[in-house]
Image (cartoon, rainbow, N blue to C red; front, side):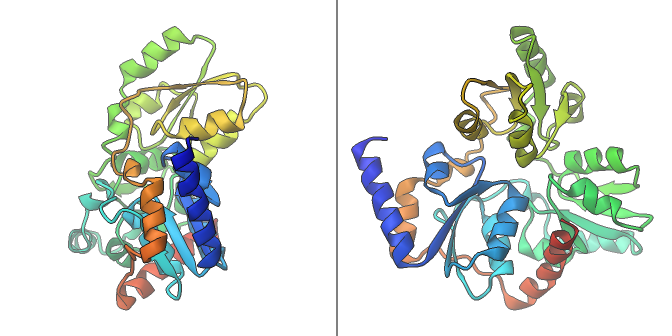
Length: 304
C-alpha cells in the first residue's frame, strides 16, 4: 500500500470511530476497499450484518440495491453509498409497474424476488432471496406457481434444483454473461487438475461445465477445502483478491478476465473518505415502500 493510500485509510479509520460507522463491502469490490471494510461478504451475509449492526452509520461499498436493503432493515441509521451512480443493470431490468402487471397474469402465484432488485420491486414481492439461499427459500414454499424476478438464469437454476414450476422474468447480469462455455473449456485445458466453480447467474451452458454452481460465500467456503489446490472461478474477478488472501499457496484462475463489473469498481478509498466527511450520498427509501419491502426481506432472513 503506497503512502497516499495509507493516509487515506488512516483518515477513513479515524472518521469511522468518530462517527460510529461500519463499512460493509461486497466480494466484488476493489481489493483496497475489501481491505478497509469491517466485513466483506455476499448479499445475504451483508444483509444479515446490516440487520445486526449497532453502528449509527453504515457505509455500504456495493451497489444501490444493497444500500437500499441496509436502509430497509435500519431506517433509524444513516446509510451511505460512496458513489451514487453505482447501480445494477439487472436490478434495472424490472420495475414495480412491470411486476404488478406480471402478477395480474398469474394472480395465484407467489412472487420471489432476487435481492438484486429495487426496494420498490421488493415491496411488490412476497419473498426475497439471494443466490446463497434461493433454493432454500423456494423449497420452503407450498405455492403451485412462483414468479421469479429479475434473473432468469438464477431462477432457472433454482427451478432445476427444486422441481418447482417457476415463471421467469427475462433479466440477467451483464457481467456474468461475459463468461462463455469456451472460456471454461479453455481454462480446463490449461489447468487440467483444477476444479471449476461458477455463479448461478451464469448461463446454463456455463453452469453445466462446472463442478459446482455457488454464491460467492459458497465459493469462499469451497476454496477453503483442503483438497482444493487449483480453482477456476466463474464470477466477477475481484473475488480473487479475497480468495488469494485467505488461501495462500493455492491457485485461483479467473474463468474470464472480462467478467469485471464497472459499477462495483466505482467505489474507491477516496470516495469512502469523502462520504464519511460529508455524510453523503445518503440512501433512503420512502416509508410506505420500506414497510412493504421489509416484510419481503424479513421472510428471507427468517428462512436463513
